[in-house]
Image 1 (cartoon, rainbow, N blue to C red):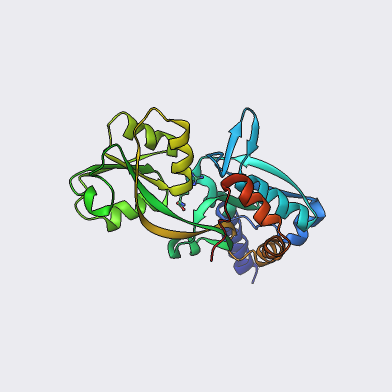
Image 2 (image 1 turned 90 degrees about the vertical axis):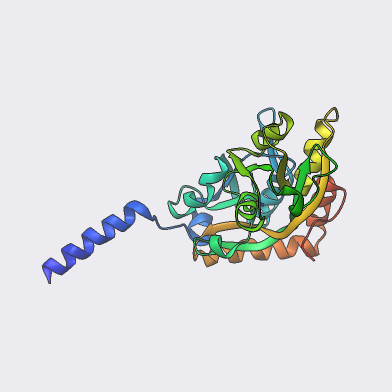
Length: 255
Ligand code: ARG
C-alpha cells in the first residue's frame, strides 16, 4: 500500500514537471487577473507601437476581460512557444491568430473563432500568383504556422521552403530575393504592403481559408466558456463590429 502510494506520488511529481494544472475561470476570478499571451509582431492583430501593445486582437482580448469582469496582463512570447506555455500554466489564454487545426486541437482547447481569413501568395512577379506557380520556386513562411505547414504538405513541386521566426523576416526573404514567394495572412499582407509602397509586391491567390481562435490549456472548459459568453455578447451588442471597423474598415467575423 505504502509502496504503491510512493510510486503514485513519484509519477505525479514527474507529471507535474511537464504539465502544470491550468487555472480555472474561478481561480482567475479569485486572483483577479487574466494572463494573456501573444507574439506581438503581427500587425494589425497584435504589435507594438513604441512600447504599447496594440491591434485588433489586443482590443478584442481586453474587451473580453472587461466583459468577464477581470483585469488582464500581457506577455509577448515568440510565436512558436505560445501554445506549449498553456500546458505549463505560464499564461491562461493565447490570442495570436492561430488557425483551428486538428493537430493543434490535440494539444489545446480553442475558443469560438474571432475571425476568418486565409493564406495568400505574395511575390514580386506577375507570374507567381497561386499554388501551381510555386513549383520549382523557393517559398518563405513563418515557423510554426499553418502557412508553412500548407506549403510543405500540400503544394507540389516547391523547390525549397524557408522558414523564419517572424513573419517580417519571411517578408524580408522575399524582398531580398532569397525567396520567390512569401505565404502569409491576407490582412497582414495588406498592411505590410501599404507600409512598403516602394516595393512592387503582388498579392496573389488565397491558398486556403481558416478559422482563427484564441486557445486555452486543453480541457479548461470554464475559461473557454467565460470567454465564449463574452464573445457572443460582443457580436450582439456591436462592440465586436466596432473594433473590427476600427482596424479593418470591415467586419471580419466568421460567416
Ligand atoms: N494563422 C496562421 C497560423 O495559424 C499564422 C499565425 C501567425 N501568428 C502570429 N502571431 N505570428 O499558424
